[in-house]
Length: 205
Image (tube, rainbow, N blue to C red; front, side, top):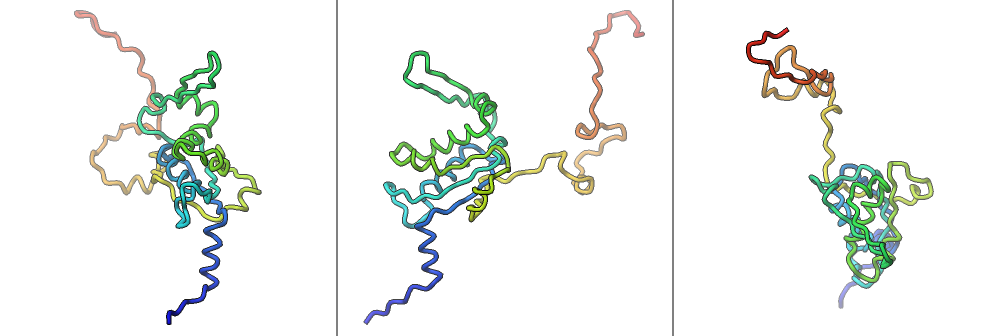
């Protein structure tokens, strides 16, 4: 005779969470657009759930903040071209990523996530659960629904001007600078002016 364990309250709650729509938030500050799109698309499609099926809509809501600070590698802001065609006369347009980002700070993140969802019939329904915000300000009716925070795809490093004086002094010194050395983030270097080539045989004034 086989013994079947009863479903506990904890298991029942986990089962409810699998079938319910969860709300996740992720910070796009200094995150690569393609890597961020792959991770957000995974939660929009529900691929992180054991009940996932390609033809089943079991995804969650994802809130992406700080879209204005999204990043690209190298010169991708200039070389990444988005093609638009409305099938009307003179409707074709090839626009680089930096122009789209200046016009709409959330559009590059939307396009990368939409591309990562793949070419399927559920893509238009899945993208409706994506909530993009250019900065960290999120409305209260969205904030109260958030239940978990996703880990960023890249580690955000500190800029050179964000370190304190104690942290700078603790850095190992590779080169010993002179007393008159100017640090670029502490003091601006004055413009020395245009260099003039001295004429042979003429003394400098």
